[in-house]
Image (tube, rainbow over the protein chains, first blue to last red):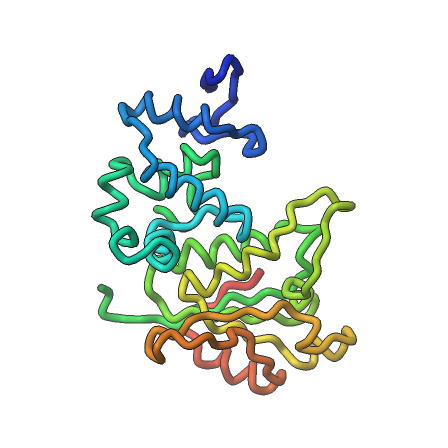
Length: 110
Length: 136
């Protein structure tokens, strides 16, 4: 599978995650969001950027409960809860947001 | 959630690179952490090298996954036993290992050390208490 963004082709796996994480650019997230009928707002980007930083630091995509806790610590309690995160990413803040962020499927998401 | 909590221990006995065991073990630990069991990790034999600080894999062309051990605390995996004799036999001390910590929810989120150095005899006793052991 593959997606087209910014005039380039990006290879993805059978679940839609980028094959080569290093290729990611913001346009990839925009295209993936459009396919899921989502319009990315600054609130979405805050979480996507947070995930990319988390991956940079720990080399894994966090499971959703770990993400929720970490978001609460970094961005405040009103954002560190599943209601807020699921409102932004209806297909699951772990799976969907990690995909937009160019990360692999979260470790520990079943 | 579940009425019966079991004691799970993951044994890590091999060097981090060269085989896939160390990374696979870490992934299984992180996935298994979702099940709310009483999880501990043991590092012995060459497994103690998995926790050595300053790992650099540039020349072996493998992903350096040592930063992922820092995430264990977020996954509520807070008991890492390192065998004293295995460290000594390799000329290592606790100071050669990455400092790994967690925040204790029951103690006002105080930061605590996850790594505990135990003797071979103590580790044998801890193993005796386990319900399930995974050896990598």
